[in-house]
Image 1 (cartoon, rainbow, N blue to C red):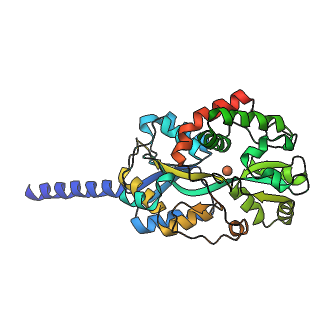
Image 2: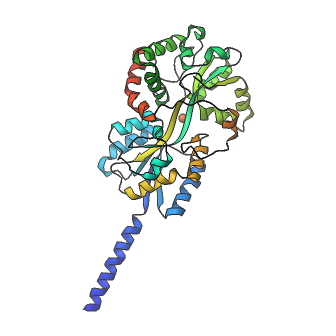
Image 3: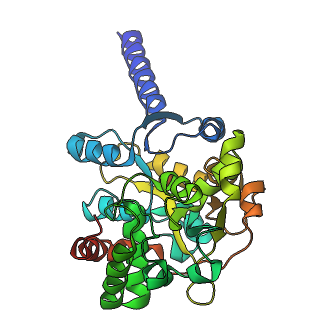
Length: 338
Ligand code: FE
């Protein structure tokens, strides 16, 4: 009798141990999918013993999925790109605030909110066709609205998060009325109706279909580093201009993430966020997409980014972009920037 009770106790103990071993997982919903990410995640598992289950999909699909799963969502962490998207997730109340001394120390205050953290940064730069546009005519975002560039501007949709965030920064710097005036000026300068992604705008500029466009920095780096000669040749026709170097600096956006309110594995989730701010993880994270680490003390050796030169970055808190993103969308709608 005694022995069987002991056996039962041991069995129960075994069951508990198994359960806690099973708890050592992290469910990651990620909009990132780069080759270097394999090493990034494997290192985390090696260091912590926490296994990562990854669901990778497009940014907006993941957000929809988390919303649909609701309280039953297995997701612990949502990783995505652009402050406008993080703002959307935040507005929907999907994130849980994370208090971490380590994250607060590593990630500067302008690159985080109470609910999410940036892990890499990218800039939104001006690209100009060297033959069609004089560089001095396209030094600032404001110049894109100048009559000098009539019929020469190409753009992706005004509803895309990259452009929403750029507008959100202009709202912060210029005020809503001036920002709307700017949007109307740019629309008046369009060479064609907005279509395609950033790379399509770069290609249209190189081909001379338009004179000028804006693009995130990593698309330029990708073409500069491309193993296709045609991509590199294309970049020879394009001038890369760091915008607003004499005023507020180039618009900076981020890729980042946060812990979900419904996360079943909160402890693992915080550990993972802290891991992403470590030196090694920062290098992998940034290099996977030709971005800059969010942790300022971490250096990257990326020849394409180095070739693009040093620049003044906008120091506007990314949380401000998030806050202004709804106003930004309204401005694009009123200005007819579809
Ligand atoms: Fe992108």
